[in-house]
Image (cartoon, rainbow, N blue to C red; front, side, top):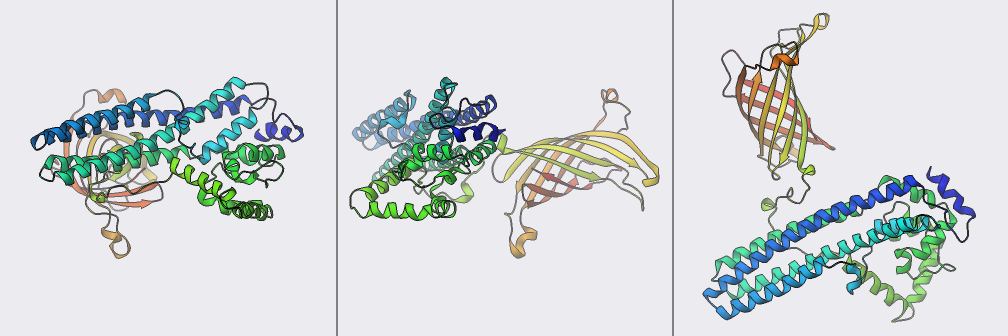
Length: 479
């Protein structure tokens, strides 16, 4: 389908495509909308963080009244002033790229912007193209805003640290510095996760760019209009073939040199000569390129060192969205059996957990109790009951390596369960249930394999009724 609308551009000189297919329009709009939703969530988190840290500074400044009332008044006035300006700039409408900051180079957005411009060059769909380009510009502004807030918070953290050194007798300021540093580390993680999602191309983007790379018109358009091409000052009549650069929509700085050498072939030598000739004139070409790279890095992905924070005190789950903190799983538990017979009963359970932090998971589950008869020649599926579960897992040991792998990733597990242990023929029979309570405690061993985790549990039922097993073994997987 992509080739059907990409290949006709081969014969066009002034107009790349007549119209953008409706399905591709839908893909582009949905992609941008998804990124805008992520940006909106980040913006809400930024407002909440700024408000929280502002109150931390005000509280710390108020403590100065005990030793220096004038310093306290000046610090509070300055704090309200700088945070007020930040919030004013934060809520200002428009593109923050125009505030004097260099437009950041974001590989995925550069490819997407070129794709929108190229496919929307026809007379139709101008309004949609304009809207899409405006939204992409908004995402770049969100990127710059995130970096600006990160730098602002780092500066305010240093200001608080200087206040602590000046007034070491005030313990409350020391606590404010620790809290500020902790929130700054979490914000950097949250911003890094958002950048990763923003730079992750969808499958349709990679497919479209791969198809368009075979179109000479698109190659010409790319080297005339991409941000990467403008960085190197490439012109239409002298520039090398830039088609392969956007093959996967990810023109990262780290892979740029490799991509040029592997995919441009002999043209890469011409590029090196072009850069060498520019570098031969001090203060002109090469200096301009170096300055552009520096400005793009400062506006984009460069990360400065965060305040040291012990790994044991950092909750990596805190910066993840709610859905990514959920843990899905299932497990199987079998009952007693005689030799050469099926187990008398089986429990197949589904569970849904929530990671409170890196070491603690809590959740609920539901179990279906059934039996299969006595043996292969006497199969008889029966419904033996249902169960409702709640559980709590606490990580005891970290993942082990080498000789310690057996004792690594051990968890302490516990929970309460309600079980209905009577055979029933239909769902209607479950209305009047006779529940039995179980209290479980024991250990779990988790074995990570790719995206799944095998889970083995040995639990003791300290509330087991007479005649039932007090020790149960379960195995299953979590995702």
